[in-house]
Length: 197
Length: 178
Image (tube, rainbow over all chains, first blue to last red):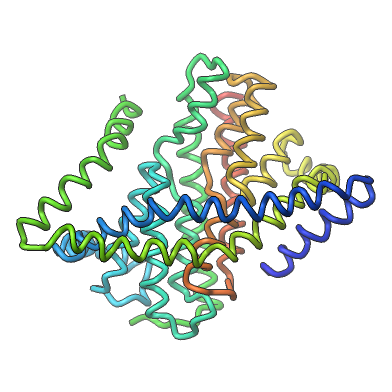
């Protein structure tokens, strides 16, 4: 599916630009996007290093294990194929907490740490495991209590009450997250390949 | 009240973690600085590893957006989505939201400024922008970091969540502000 979408985005863009007679934008867009990808990755290095360093300290001190133990009922419900006391549970919880608080910068390093942990349990290293699919479903639909950026945009545009969309946003994302979790359960029951441990 | 509380927690979360974790670890006898450096080293490798995946995805999305193909797609699906009660003006944002976080924010900001922040469309754009994450970015970066190329049903889940959050945003904005 991702191959098809990737090809469709690229090919349809080139065909449309050709028909519209502005094929030049394709080159500009392709080159600048490629450069931007590297900028994004490089900017990530410092933040990644900071949080992964801190996470390592938390692991050594037993804090990650403690957090994982406290939230065990939730994590074993969501990730039945991951062993109950696996350290990856701590990274999952840190990632979700950072997402909920709107700390996007902190969420990514914990998310990538989670992927490493889940990969170590994965039986086919080039294919997503059931637990990875669940984790990404949670991540792309995760509740953010305060959508700070968009509140800022509304304030700048002169809104009477910039934060009034907080309630509607939490509702919409809550519905999406519930549907994502339920759909994941359905998909896993039908197409799942990893069994409960 | 609720917003102030959440803002307070968000502001304090990072300083608190930076304080509590190293202090607790030190008291437990962990060599905090050495451990930090050992953990931080991984950050570099992971960030570099995602570059090829990110280049591939951003180039395709960049070409799609700049060429005008997106506007064409909006016009093609407008009749169908109209039957579902989706306002046509929200379609560019709805299509861009899973593809590019920055691109979607630009569209949302433009809608908020054009229609006014307290108009129905302005509020709908804000709700739609804030209520989901950039599915393609998350999948590209997360799967890329561990070298996974077969996404199985993860992309379907992400897109189902995106469509659901759009429909829920339209529903709740109508209900509360309509």
